[in-house]
Image (tube, rainbow, N blue to C red; front, side, top):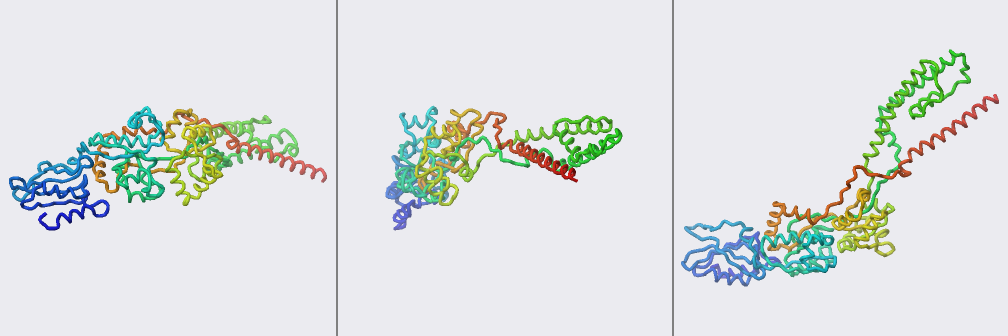
Length: 529
């Protein structure tokens, strides 16, 4: 401080750019003049732009001519610049009275006024604090209320006073958002911190350059909710699943061998009885017998010889085993297989579902910017959401009610939808519920860029997380997805499920007609000869 321009240097340092050079990442050590006391230096600093997190150590002369070590900082509004003795200079060494960490030295914020802001989207008739803290009123604005509990945790730890402003939105119309809402209040130094959660990244990372996010402890999710009972597409391979390729090949070999054995036994039996082999011959007799037995349809004739009966007996035993293995495997496969669920915007666009949205600022901002890059979202926006220049906008209750009725997809926050679904959906509807995520981002309390309180509040939130407080708040205020309690879903059997059966029946009828026409033609040709 003996330098002639020392005060001017400190003044310029405190006003460099927007945030100055007194934030915690810079450490300042000042040595007073021989006849300069701490009060003199204190008066010099009253002209500067000071902060809560400034690290300024001053070695000043006391009344007895000894050097004492003090720190200077500004806790905030209503308190102002503060000095605190932390040690002394003795025998050329600095002796610290209390080896406090930065957090311990700044934790007590009694008397400090913190300016905060929150965003409420639904009207309320109670007081603001009651609306934000009463669990009985947690049906709406859960997103803001959860982060308000985190803010109240900071109030309890540090003991500061606060006031709350209620802007109409979080951000303005630009991607960074500093032109409106809560974000503009931060940028203009109207408030110090938000008591509402703010999305870290909605479209781009521009916001990181304008604001500080203290610590994310919440995952923001907005989805398209709809009932999806499951769709079964025609699949020829479904009937082949119970047996692997080797089993089918062995079955065909066995079928061929049995057909040959039946033909030989029939030939020997007919010849032994003196029958007419030509009149009793049939090209597909043995094949029809094997197929009928495997299909559990029985036999049209009863063999008389012991050899033929032995062949058919073993064929029946084999058919029972194969039939049981096949049907059991097929049924268990169909039961355990989960129905197909739409997972992308493209599938939602190509479906027959009508689409509606809840009117929320972030939804409109996200869609208007995202459609420039996402072709399918743009098509969904033009064809189903803003159909014929009329937006399909519904309240949360109306949208969830339409979802319950079916053939409708509704976009809203997951924490808004889940309580309504739990109250209005029966178990079958809950098990049929599906969702397509549109926005999935971390959120946090937001402060001014390079905020003087960021480091302090980060440590406090970390301590709240380590002690389980945040986990308890999450379980209390954030409603999880309603659980499907049914052990197995009951799905109606539709035409798609029976497609393969009807197809095989049609092929059998067609094959029988072709065979009949061939036999008639063959006999007529032989008759004319």
